[in-house]
Image 1 (tube, rainbow, N blue to C red):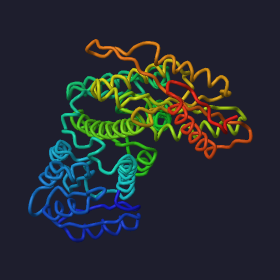
Image 2: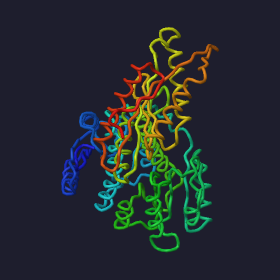
Image 3: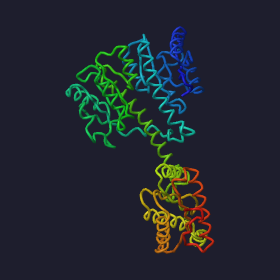
Image 4: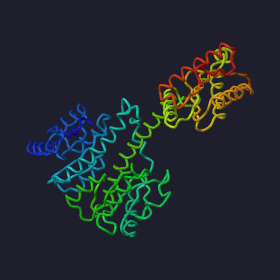
Length: 466
C-alpha cells in the first residue's frame, strides 16, 4: 500500500467529476490522483502504483474497457483493483467490464456511503496482501509471477440461503456458467465438525443477508470470518433490497461483494470468479510465505532444523528451564574425519552419510528434544528436563548408534563413521535464560574440542557444567 491513507487514481474526462471525486476522497482520508484520459491513466498507474483505480467507462482517447485490458496485461498494474463506473445503465457494458477484469461496476450517480464502504473493503484486502508481501523483498519472490493458468482449478462456492429451493435454483443457474463446484449448505451445516476438509473447504461463500431473521446472514459471515477454516474465504452477501446504509454495513462487516438477488446468473458468476481469483492469489502468497519461513528454518539436505532455528529454540528451552527450575542439557556433535570421507568416497557419499547420521540421531532422541544441523558436519542437540547423568547416557548411546552399523551407499559400498560429542548441563534455578544458553553452548563446543583431542568417538563433559 502506498502510504497510510491509500492512493486512489480517478480517471474521468469531465473535470467537474474529477474534482468532486477528489474532494470526497480527500475528506475521507485518501490520497487522490487524477487523469483525464486513458493514456494518462496508464502512465500514472505504471509510475505510481495506486492502491485502487476509479475508471470511467467512456474516455476521449480509448474506452475504459481497453484501458482496463491494458492494465490487466501489464505485470506492474494487473493486480490493482479497478472500479469502473458509467452514467449509463447498460447491462452489456457492465458484463464486458467484469469480463475484462473489473472488480466492480457502479452506475452514476454513485452513492457516497456505498462508494466509501466499497473503498474501505478494497483497502482492507490490499493491506492484507501488503502484510504478506512485506515479509519478502518482492512479490516475485513470493511466487506472484506465475501465469494466470494457475487459476484453472475449479473453486468451491458455498450457497447459504434461507430457503433450500432458492439455493438449489441458484446452484443450477451458476453451474451452467462455469466449472466451479457449487455446494448448498444450511446454516446448521456450517458448524458441523469436518465440513471444511482440506479439499472441500469453500473458497467463496454466497450468503443471503436474512436467513430467516434480519441480518442473520451478516452475523453468520462474521462468525465464519473468526474461524480458522474459513477466515481466508471470500464472502458475497446476497440482499433482496440493498440500500446505501445497509451496503455500507455489509462491506464494513467484511463482505467482499454485495449483490442484488435479482442479479443475473452470468453476472453473479463473473463476480464470483473475480472473488475466487483474488482469493487464490492471496492463498498462493500465504503458502509461498509459509514455505519460505519453513525453508528458512530447515536444512535442505537432512531435513533437520538449521542453526537459526536451533539458537532461537535453545533460548526458549533455557527460559522455560529458568522459569520452571528444571534442568536441561546441550550437546554439540561432530562427525569425525568427515573431510576424509568426502575426499575418498566423493561428496555424494558425504551427503548420504550426513542424511543417515541425522536419521540415526533423530531415532535415538525424544520428540521433545531439539536436533539441528548447525554446520557442515556439526549437530546441536538440546535435552529439556534432563539432568547431567541422563544426558551423558544419551550422548553415549548416540555415539554407539552412529558407529555400530556401517552406512550403506546407493552403489552398495559400505563405510563406518563415528562422532565426537561435547556435553554441558544447566544448574537451575541459579542459571538463567538465554545468557546461560549461550554460555552452555560455548561450554559444549569446548568439550567437543576436548573429545577430538583425546582421540575422537567419545563424549566429554564441559568443566563448568554441574
